[in-house]
Length: 296
Image (tube, rainbow, N blue to C red):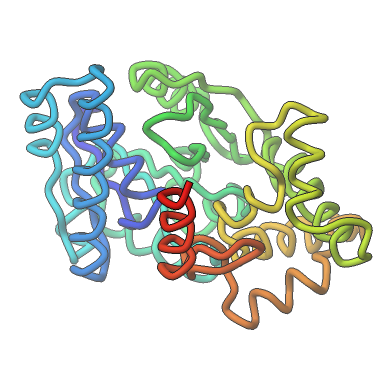
């Protein structure tokens, strides 16, 4: 497999494209929005510059990586020569099913179809295609170029050949693949999301404040980031979507999203991406932090 198509130029999509391109693969990055594509390439460029600043990449390697990426606003064009397609669109089941139906109709017969879904059933997605044996989950972690883990999720019909090919390919990306079966939330989010939801419940019940809850988990449990800050980083809308999938899948009240999370998403407080979640990420807040730093 040499030709890779990534569907979606958002946070996960551009990170996946960056990772494949830096490993020497030819990447078609596709999104319906040219603005999103331009932003995605800008993000990849910025991240490559950060790697150069740390002495882990040369300018020549940066240019080679960028040269390996071609952008498209047409899925048909983006997938026509693909050996592997990785879908990284919004965590919306209906949207994903439509995308996979379109990919299946236009991709070569040998092409493997992978999804970066963090919770939606691989088997259900596979049923929207005529090649369920070539459908697999590749759940990368954010930020993709840095995080080593990839959950490799088998659907009911995923063939051994497909699984083995993707498992070994993940290693060539410098990742550590872990075999996972197809249950709601897989492993990472089945454990992580209830913890985040419980942190929100703790805040909702007035047990402690945002910074206090995060400080307990960072200093007491050695977590690099508190659960509420992590929720902001993931996106509160994404957290809500994953919890809803798990609640629908297990019919267990422990996965029911906390009302505070639901209300924050309805109010557009989505975390880092919207400028406000459990923390304030607005430009005015950043300026305030800089002013305080210089005042010292």
